[in-house]
Image (spheres, one colour):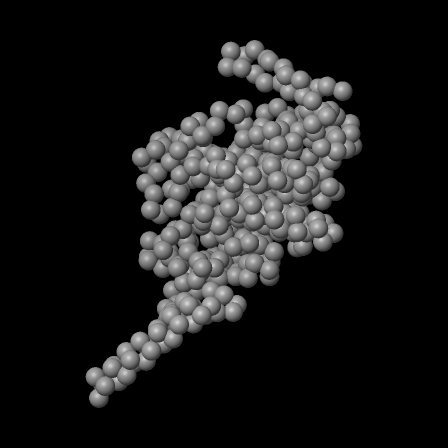
Length: 412
């Protein structure tokens, strides 16, 4: 059977090319058959994007949510959305608190996800405890939503340690500063889990800039060839630091890249918490059932600079930022919950107070002075110290002893 991949040219004319289903993996064929749709309709994202709650917090009619046969997304229940909203408010407060801590000199650097919190909260909510999350440097809110203590997450940004939490405690990898390397690590974990017979699902986060990296191609291709349960979740915030998406890719969408690897792709409004959670829920279910990896593109926006060292006024206009203020995920979800009678003033105040308490605890932790031990430079490099490091550690210990003795002598 031969289907056709449809593309629309800049002139508006539709061009079709045959899709050879003999090149498609068995898992993809089974998945498309289970939904009663063609392989083409399974692999390609729905036309437009999935959006359930509009910018004013109103639930859109089902026929206007961007869903299609085989791409249906049930609305998450109210209790689950209310819980996710609380994490959304906490995430926003943490982002703003960290921005203040950087200005106060208590943190070296912080890549804010202000405006992208819905994506990160939804990722954590969609995963089971046994699943794994591989974040980027901007995904602090996702890591905290997995249960990691905020203080432990911020330790790395303070420059105190490489990382302050044990990845195995919450099945959450350390935040990755090198671009896209975490995708390869995620694929490796999924491959190992498959070999052990586990039903682990892995979500690997990245930004739009990461899709231009070679590691992105290698990770997706390996995952597809080996039919691994990995969800590649791209938070498309429009910029790879200062490079706009239009100068990175001319694909119809980043989600369309999935078909080139033989995996399903989907687009979703990344500022619509309900829609992102619904799309991720389906992706996790499909991946766990053995239908292979998926690529999801969430269209969102970074409201603040890339980091505190970045001047975003040099590459984007303030009018653009203002336009996205109207799409704020926190404001939108609050409006929806109030419209549905799921949130009142008392509950909103409780959530706000909780967020303030989290911010206070983080602030107090970051304001505590630390006394680093220079010997730790060698203690935590290898389980069994190499002869070279042992020699260097001994030299350092001798120098510290001489300094200490000298200081004692001067004091006398």
